[in-house]
Image 1 (cartoon, rainbow, N blue to C red):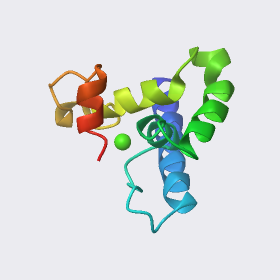
Image 2 (cartoon, rainbow, N blue to C red):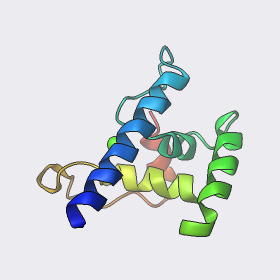
Image 3 (cartoon, rainbow, N blue to C red):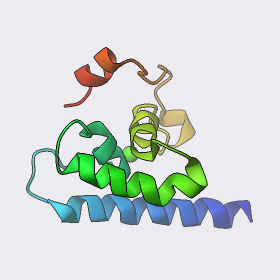
Length: 104
Ligand SMILES: [Ca+2]
């Protein structure tokens, strides 16, 4: 059961990241290892990402509560989707200053 749950989650993340690239493959803001939620959270300070984040947050609100996209971005900073031995031991940046420095 644990393998099934892990595999389904990996498939979801893989398709999410593929869809993120397919949305705008020739943008310099597109990165293959980023979900649409994380990208929307990273760029939430401007449109169209502010709109994307509002829609995605609304969809995920019943399951995860508010601020899904910003939380996805913070989670991305911890390299949560990497194998455990490849994750950065540094804690995620929670303050806005550190977040702005890591945007690009
Ligand atoms: Ca990632």
